[in-house]
Amino acid sequence: MVVAVTRPTRIIVSKSAVKHNLDETRKSANAEFMWLAVKSNAYGFGLIPMSQAAVEAGVDGLAVAILDEALAIRQVGITIPILVLGITPAEYAPLAAEYDVMLTVANQTWLDQATTTLAKSDKALQINFGVDTGMNRIGFTDREALANALAFADNQKVFDVVGIMTHFAESDSPHVDYFHGQIARWHELTDGLPLPRMVHLANSAAALYHADEIPTEVIRAGTIAYGIEPSQGELRDRSYVEPVLTLETELNFVKQCHEGDGVSYGHTYYTSENEWIGTIPLGYGDGLSRKVQGFEVIIEGERCPLIGKPAMDQMMVALPHEFPVGTKVTIIGKNNGLENTLEDVGAHVGITPWEVGIHLQERITRVLGA
Image (cartoon, rainbow, N blue to C red; front, side):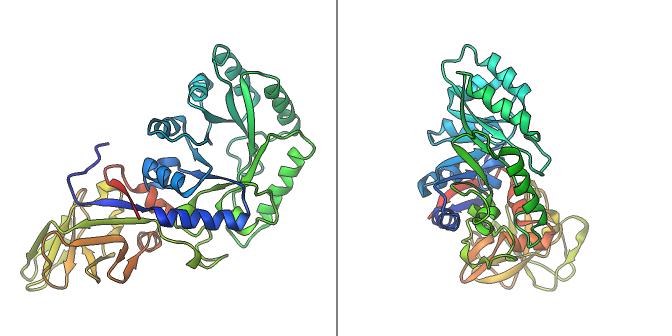
């Protein structure tokens, strides 16, 4: 994907907000080691800028979904631990070892394959065991198989057995029965086994709301670091979280219309006499839903609705009066005392705030801000 640096549309990642949110999470869990999940282009915020902001904020390690993301982080000089949460084909185990990237193990078959591929490697591969306690995604589900795999890996010089984890399907809800069932299953599978030095169960929500029920020396932060309260305010007021992402652009065309002029495809909006409208260089090709029509952006402290169907690369906005070309338009973020959040956009288009972020395309340039 080409990154559009020649248009005024950009995402700004607030370093101070990232640090605040990570500090709040660490404090809530009393964690000694904190991973930050930067998978899927750091939830859409930008893999490299978000990783850099996290390192500056003092995070201990970065967690990704695929090895390619880990290699991209290494290529910009970031040296802290990196964990791949998903399954990596065993043929790439030597590559992961070369770049000091930890891989997740989900079964004995993978260990057997990786033992062979690592035979000629100069470095041991750091590994992290996945245990499935009820997410039903990846990981060991049988105690004996887990015990045998741990013992096998510990006896192979090609492996450095570092971690073991599980993941909760529902830790951000007032309904805790399934969460407690997963904790019970964790104990059934692991109690009494010689576990690796890094045991991590807690995601953002578990670290924030259940720190007294599970080990939290090591945690995995996710949505909270991105300024999104995991329970959406249901279990804890949102006020402790600071927004991280700003999405802004500029008016690049402004004109006054006649009564009845149709705007954009299908003419779902008609102008009134002498109505001012502006055009912004941002569209559904940048990852915004076409349902964003009617959402109010902020221009010089005034809320202005997006009108007409969003086009792939441009959208139109109704203006209360003439604004000069080059005037800043805030889609997400603060502008002259007003604010739009990821939650606001998500509520308007009918998706979760983290989906709003994930959908934002790489074409939008991303920069670090204060």
